[in-house]
Image 1: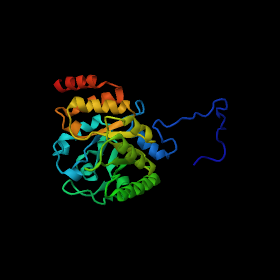
Image 2 (image 1 turned 120 degrees about the horizontal axis):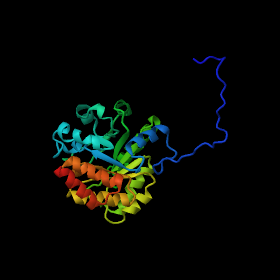
Image 3 (image 1 turned 90 degrees about the vertical axis):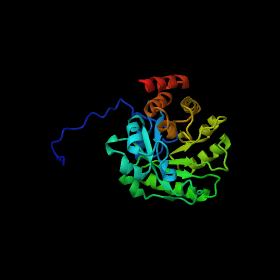
Image 4 (image 1 turned 135 degrees about the vertical axis):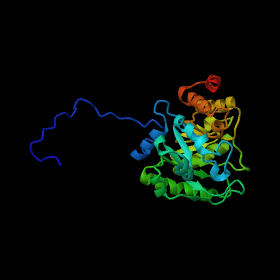
Length: 291
């Protein structure tokens, strides 16, 4: 302990220097707690304000999807090139080396597989997320679906626990067979997630009116990659989403099912962080693919 007597007197108070005031670099998060800002600051690039997330949580409902048969062979070599990874606790423990030191968006809800319709999902224990050092808790929310109330309840309870322990909540908008991926629906689903406590939102891109989706959501939006499309198309979607207000992408199949996954992930980074246009990013992809 410091001695009570004989200490050097404090004198450098900087009386002529005003205290610097800074807004947080992500929208809507100026007033959240320090821990949430710290974790969001690791998920999102402070220079671009965006993130490139790598999603490989598909197996929790789809089993061994193409490209995810061997996580250690197909996914682990990609992790270095992502800003954040999104996966389940099972794969995290069994396949992802802790020394990769990447922020983890932990799949925090679980329920049925693709063999059944969506049911009333359960959520994990917050202590499990803390043990795994999760940087975000990803919760599926089915706005307009049969289990809307249950999934919103899951989101609310997760956001409460996340706020208590300083862990952001990622609201993931689910689109069922009967729901249309248009700006009207996506705006509503994203806004509902934000209003109920999501720190940021993952939703789909739509061709018309996506700028309305991002404008109406008071917290950052990252887009889901969705089903595999040609590489140039995926880069075009990422580019348009960023230009229309998205704060990043969370791609899975359009990366790990590409002909050259590392090259694709680097090309996506070029779009999201370096403002490459789709054609420029596609050229980069082809250069890296053939190198």
